[in-house]
Image (tube, rainbow, N blue to C red; front, side, top):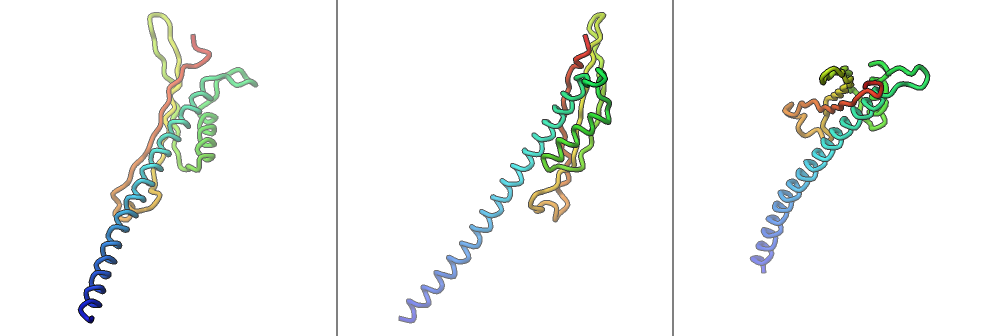
Length: 145
Protein backbone atom coordinates (compact mmCIF):
# COMPACT_ATOMS: atom_id res chain seq x y z
CA UNK A 1 0.00 0.00 0.00
CA UNK A 2 2.84 2.42 0.84
CA UNK A 3 4.49 1.77 -2.54
CA UNK A 4 1.26 2.87 -4.28
CA UNK A 5 1.08 6.11 -2.29
CA UNK A 6 4.76 6.90 -2.97
CA UNK A 7 4.39 6.25 -6.70
CA UNK A 8 1.26 8.41 -6.81
CA UNK A 9 2.96 11.35 -5.04
CA UNK A 10 6.00 11.13 -7.38
CA UNK A 11 3.67 11.16 -10.37
CA UNK A 12 1.73 14.19 -9.11
CA UNK A 13 5.02 16.02 -8.43
CA UNK A 14 6.11 15.34 -12.00
CA UNK A 15 2.77 16.57 -13.31
CA UNK A 16 3.14 19.76 -11.30
CA UNK A 17 6.59 20.45 -12.76
CA UNK A 18 5.38 19.72 -16.30
CA UNK A 19 2.39 22.01 -15.82
CA UNK A 20 4.63 24.82 -14.55
CA UNK A 21 6.92 24.51 -17.57
CA UNK A 22 4.06 24.36 -20.08
CA UNK A 23 2.16 27.25 -18.47
CA UNK A 24 5.25 29.47 -18.35
CA UNK A 25 5.92 28.80 -22.04
CA UNK A 26 2.28 29.47 -22.87
CA UNK A 27 2.33 32.72 -20.91
CA UNK A 28 5.54 33.78 -22.67
CA UNK A 29 3.91 33.07 -26.05
CA UNK A 30 0.79 35.05 -25.13
CA UNK A 31 2.88 38.06 -24.08
CA UNK A 32 4.85 37.79 -27.33
CA UNK A 33 1.66 37.80 -29.37
CA UNK A 34 0.41 40.83 -27.42
CA UNK A 35 3.69 42.69 -28.04
CA UNK A 36 3.64 41.90 -31.76
CA UNK A 37 0.01 43.03 -32.09
CA UNK A 38 0.74 46.30 -30.26
CA UNK A 39 3.85 46.84 -32.41
CA UNK A 40 1.79 46.48 -35.59
CA UNK A 41 -0.99 48.68 -34.20
CA UNK A 42 1.42 51.51 -33.35
CA UNK A 43 3.07 51.20 -36.77
CA UNK A 44 -0.30 51.44 -38.53
CA UNK A 45 -1.32 54.40 -36.34
CA UNK A 46 1.85 56.27 -37.31
CA UNK A 47 1.14 55.66 -40.99
CA UNK A 48 -2.43 56.89 -40.49
CA UNK A 49 -1.20 59.97 -38.60
CA UNK A 50 1.22 60.81 -41.41
CA UNK A 51 -1.57 60.36 -43.93
CA UNK A 52 -3.89 62.63 -41.95
CA UNK A 53 -1.14 65.24 -41.64
CA UNK A 54 -0.45 65.10 -45.37
CA UNK A 55 -4.15 65.36 -46.16
CA UNK A 56 -4.42 68.37 -43.85
CA UNK A 57 -1.27 69.95 -45.27
CA UNK A 58 -2.15 69.83 -48.97
CA UNK A 59 -5.60 71.46 -48.75
CA UNK A 60 -5.90 75.24 -48.39
CA UNK A 61 -7.57 76.45 -45.20
CA UNK A 62 -11.03 77.96 -45.54
CA UNK A 63 -10.17 81.20 -43.75
CA UNK A 64 -7.05 82.22 -45.67
CA UNK A 65 -7.09 79.99 -48.78
CA UNK A 66 -3.41 79.22 -48.13
CA UNK A 67 -1.76 75.93 -47.29
CA UNK A 68 -1.25 75.20 -43.59
CA UNK A 69 2.24 75.71 -42.19
CA UNK A 70 4.49 73.08 -40.66
CA UNK A 71 3.42 73.98 -37.11
CA UNK A 72 -0.26 73.56 -37.98
CA UNK A 73 0.42 70.19 -39.60
CA UNK A 74 2.49 69.14 -36.57
CA UNK A 75 -0.39 70.10 -34.29
CA UNK A 76 -2.90 68.11 -36.37
CA UNK A 77 -0.66 65.02 -36.34
CA UNK A 78 0.00 65.32 -32.58
CA UNK A 79 -3.77 65.53 -31.94
CA UNK A 80 -4.28 62.39 -34.02
CA UNK A 81 -1.55 60.56 -32.09
CA UNK A 82 -2.90 61.68 -28.71
CA UNK A 83 -6.37 60.42 -29.60
CA UNK A 84 -4.74 57.04 -30.32
CA UNK A 85 -2.91 57.05 -26.97
CA UNK A 86 0.56 57.67 -28.42
CA UNK A 87 2.78 60.48 -27.16
CA UNK A 88 6.29 61.68 -27.87
CA UNK A 89 6.00 61.72 -31.65
CA UNK A 90 8.30 63.78 -33.86
CA UNK A 91 6.78 65.23 -37.03
CA UNK A 92 8.87 66.38 -40.01
CA UNK A 93 7.20 68.32 -42.83
CA UNK A 94 9.15 68.51 -46.08
CA UNK A 95 8.00 70.26 -49.26
CA UNK A 96 8.86 68.28 -52.39
CA UNK A 97 8.91 69.70 -55.93
CA UNK A 98 8.88 67.36 -58.90
CA UNK A 99 9.58 68.83 -62.32
CA UNK A 100 8.28 67.07 -65.42
CA UNK A 101 9.04 69.03 -68.55
CA UNK A 102 7.99 72.60 -67.83
CA UNK A 103 5.50 71.76 -65.07
CA UNK A 104 6.54 71.80 -61.41
CA UNK A 105 4.27 69.78 -59.16
CA UNK A 106 4.40 70.47 -55.43
CA UNK A 107 4.01 67.77 -52.81
CA UNK A 108 4.20 67.60 -49.04
CA UNK A 109 6.01 64.76 -47.33
CA UNK A 110 5.04 64.07 -43.71
CA UNK A 111 7.31 61.84 -41.62
CA UNK A 112 6.23 60.79 -38.12
CA UNK A 113 8.54 59.00 -35.65
CA UNK A 114 7.93 57.74 -32.14
CA UNK A 115 10.10 55.65 -29.80
CA UNK A 116 8.34 52.35 -29.23
CA UNK A 117 8.02 51.19 -25.65
CA UNK A 118 7.18 47.61 -24.85
CA UNK A 119 3.75 46.78 -23.54
CA UNK A 120 4.91 44.01 -21.20
CA UNK A 121 8.43 45.27 -20.53
CA UNK A 122 10.02 41.86 -21.13
CA UNK A 123 12.68 43.01 -23.60
CA UNK A 124 13.27 46.24 -21.71
CA UNK A 125 14.74 44.31 -18.79
CA UNK A 126 17.74 43.47 -20.90
CA UNK A 127 17.87 46.75 -22.84
CA UNK A 128 17.83 44.90 -26.14
CA UNK A 129 14.62 46.27 -27.57
CA UNK A 130 15.15 49.94 -28.38
CA UNK A 131 13.34 50.80 -31.61
CA UNK A 132 11.88 53.88 -33.24
CA UNK A 133 8.80 53.35 -35.39
CA UNK A 134 7.94 55.68 -38.25
CA UNK A 135 5.19 56.42 -40.71
CA UNK A 136 5.38 58.49 -43.86
CA UNK A 137 2.97 59.95 -46.40
CA UNK A 138 3.44 62.01 -49.55
CA UNK A 139 0.55 63.92 -51.14
CA UNK A 140 0.24 66.43 -53.96
CA UNK A 141 -0.75 69.98 -53.04
CA UNK A 142 -4.26 70.79 -54.21
CA UNK A 143 -3.06 74.22 -55.37
CA UNK A 144 -0.33 72.66 -57.53
CA UNK A 145 -0.86 72.28 -61.30
